[in-house]
Length: 438
Ligand SMILES: Cc1cc2nc3c(=O)[nH]c(=O)nc-3n(C[C@H](O)[C@H](O)[C@H](O)COP(=O)(O)OP(=O)(O)OC[C@H]3O[C@@H](n4cnc5c(N)ncnc54)[C@H](O)[C@@H]3O)c2cc1C
Image 1 (cartoon, protein in one colour):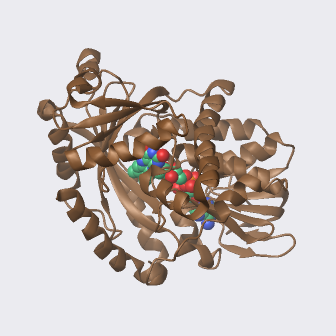
Image 2: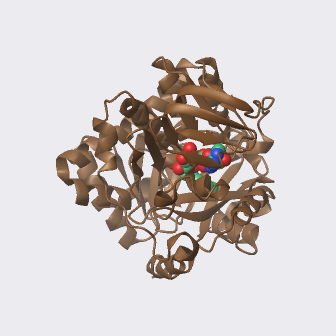
């Protein structure tokens, strides 16, 4: 896809984001000009890049971070806000299949630590980001209920994750919707305001000494003992480099990391925000105040905001094109869950791209011994991208055991390479849509 195309589509997707409307962004950080030197360079100002930068600065490294736009401009500023342990059932299956029982247990523990890390940072840096504990995974029909049981039982029984099964008759205490057949409650997971959290992570990184440059896309990379990153007006020489640019990395400079871009697919997913309700009405809707997502392949995910709106995400686009009648389609999905909200107007709609891998497990690795990459969070990056930053920091310090646990996962390239992978995936996804519908 030509550079301008994906980026222009993105601009349309972020314009009316409720997240952007509900934060006061600080003044921009400067643009990189002239020559800079650092122990570690980081490309990307989302959770993965900021987290790696923070972690490394805390460990005494001189760190420079380059963000092409503003911090949190990518998926980290637009997502559903669901902070979930694990990798999603498909990702977990792929990890188990490839790594075996003992190593997949280690990977699961890393994902639980990801949530703890996020909560520790919220506490330590007094981050104002509307954290709310508790997440529900709901099923919409008996066949998905059986799949939910199959997913939950080994996690609870063998790995001791404190999941609670909820039968249909008990659901009204948790969520006031007739649509669902059963649910699993995870008290470890939760939700927050994703853009506030990302900006707070930026504040923490800056406070720890990270030199942050915004509006500074990395355009070229010269690899070697001391990699050199070139932007429009400056350059950065570093000993180690961490690439955390998500699906946008190749949009600015084809040659940055061509060998990894075909391993992830940009999949559009979209959200709406309703007008604010009064507190009692919002509480009656989701008495548990949990984040909620269903276990369909093409899933609905929703939660209440701190100011009592329903934030509802649904649907996807594998064509890279924003679907037509987006708001009415997502509103339709929302009304299937909560018909009583028909009187509420939709005040905001936005979306972004998820970096999907073929097997839905995350994709970390090295382009060279001193160049690391973090990508492929497949819709489960809110906690895990932050943790990936910690693992990359460990790897920079030559303590790469946990990084390499993930780096050994094999990932297929999408058929057709970066330009033609879309039509192939559209066909593949039709199968999953049919499976959900049937
Ligand atoms: C609508 C939506 C809903 C989602 N919901 C959830 C959810 O509820 N729970 C969950 O766990 N996950 C969710 N996700 C996924 C989650 O948001 C991502 O996995 C996570 O934010 C990825 O973080 P990141 O740092 O890798 O990427 P990003 O946040 O996208 O950051 C990458 C940054 O790199 C910058 N960049 C790229 N290339 C360059 C370059 N060449 N030079 C300089 N900078 C560059 C970009 O501008 C961008 O800011 C959702 C995603 C979307 C889009």
